Length: 463
Image (cartoon, rainbow, N blue to C red; front, side, top):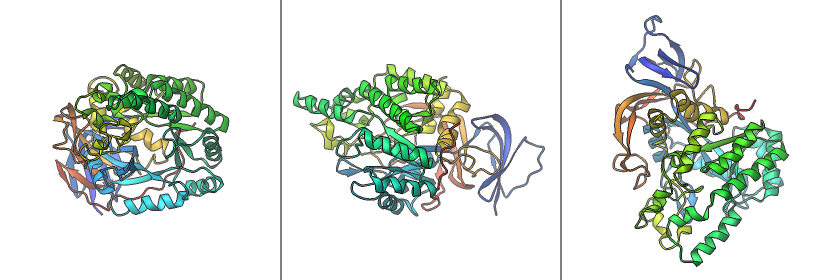
């Protein structure tokens, strides 16, 4: 059994920053102690002098191989988890999808088949519920007991994923009794479809109209509505990919009343804007995602929400489609552009840049990217921290190295970067997943199949 000692680094968790050495054995952290006094020996020593030693990132919102709009997300579980490792993320939670008319179990089995033996890092699943009925509600109980403890529903995408208020309420009531957490994509999809139809009839077909029809007020309205439904059901609710100040206001208002309402945002809403959607020559299609990018002035509100803990988590909603052949499906009709951005490799670095820029502290970086997503989705103690007993998912991070983000150097299976040419400070140097080195000084040392499936507890963030 290999013993690994990481020496000389500044260990940063959500709770602490301390110069300490970290001892790893059997895939777990077995000790964290002040340097020089512990007398530990190891088979392998990693020198982290001048570096940060941080928990591996937990990205609680990814879509590998997801079908959308007649095509599939460009990253497989193999390529997507490899890219995640390059970016310092050691756990993803992806979304298994219930197809309409099928059981939850059939959807889950299909996603297990996609991921099994392919992942370079550990992974879990949320469950997207397309049909809410007596059968699927009963299935929820069984899935919670076997580690699928979160369920996503949509007020958007009529005819695809949309659930009406009655079915959302039923699912929330079931979650209130079985301990599951309901995740909501909150946009008023019925109203948006009317605005899409009207825009296309006016000849407004360019990518920028995607942002104009998916109005911030319709995100806020749906956010307000799902919060009230959760309140009626007596259930917690987690609103995914919050993009706009108005929706954040609804979450903050509920939280200030003491309600168990939680919010996630994504790097694209913190760093990109409608300026990108408006790029000429159809380049704006690269930035089409839902919820959509907003005008820049929303960014300050989102950063403030992260500082005040009205937003708790930053995930990527990684759902990459190549510009050539996939995003181009929407030339002449923005509504046919596959929705999604690549980002699983960039999240930890972009959030470190936010530390450099003064938006958040170092500990808050680890909190929103590692610890809270682990707590929110029943993985904390094993994931999201560096402490005795935790999995040895550890990143040695160089806080002063500079890099330029580019599709030419990234490892995601997509032909563009949403952050092309952006210069940032900070870079992953070494990544361990359960004690095994998967990234070492700019080389991938991992393998498909190393990643283990994670059965999750119910949310640890309540209370």
